[in-house]
Length: 352
Image (cartoon, rainbow, N blue to C red; front, side, top):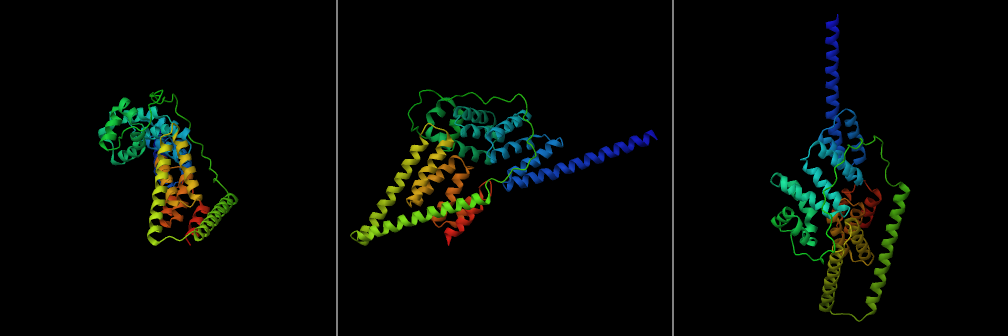
């Protein structure tokens, strides 16, 4: 009787383990699908379920870090990146993400120290995707922090030179060098994310008010354009050649002003977040003035600095619509973390 009982218990344990393994596989697939759909809050809840089932491998821990980053919770993203490295110190994606977070906080020295470590120890084993990501992240610093990179980060310098991204520095030397210390490692792993549904940001009322403001802005621009047209009609008429030359000069002037503003912002001693804000502000001024190409140029510069900033993506989609690039505008809107129906409605209405 005792032997039969032990056999039954063993079979039951094996069945329970089999059920748990099946559940883990299903939840992992579910989390991947949610992440692909940019449903980061739901993905975090699914990952929390996996943690409760005892699944604490590096794949799951890093997925938590990435989804927190996508959701805009940079503090937790940093903690879970550190947790990933505690499990596997050679996890390259976790180090790349940590460096990105340091750049967003204007901790340039820390970020470059992380990337220097990556190139020193894992430079020959980087995948094409990792190289492409590092090129995007370091492009700005190869152009505007060239002297710092050359003097303190030889492997970063070699990487930028190899990909033709290292240029002569355009900034005056800093009075003080940026900190170069590595990011401190957490002593204890952070707690698993709470499995609570995250509420949708914004309500229907908020969306409609945003749409109304955008419509009002469009009406204001149309009024300004109508007034400008009346003023032009009152002026002496130009010949076709003169008009073409004036238009070309005006276009060259607008492009020159946009490039100048971009260089001015990128050369400032401030955080990436502040640079993105300033580029959006300049783009907004151009949008109101009807200089849509110039606004698009500045917003693309902001997007290159932070490809996950919702305001930049929303503004860029609107400007692209004004330029008649409806398909591209929809693609841009599709990169946002959450679906913005007011924006999608606006794109459709402005395209008619």
